Image (cartoon, rainbow, N blue to C red):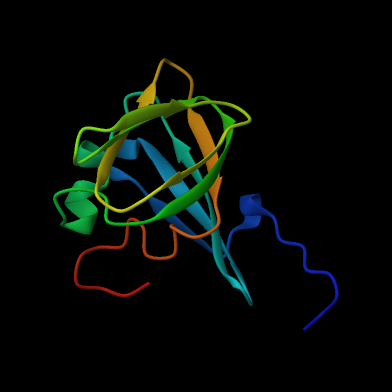
Length: 125
């Protein structure tokens, strides 16, 4: 393993588009697992733009995220909710919906939840 590894999300190892052109997930693969940068466009909502890809009723990924820009509202299946914005770290367990708040894209980096995110149901990443 090299002492320094540098990758750039603009030259991601893989890019997964969301439905209706509402953003994308850029993945870089590391020896510690994939790291993802998501760009959620205004109007993006998990139930509209990822659910058709994932084939589950709610997002079943765990997330550990840092918000670079924009705002994201997360609502758990039990009704618990929160909103994250620039500079926030947030962790979310499986069983939730989320959507962009406002008219600015929400850009975030996730260290644990994007390896299998937005992968078509029945396929492997």
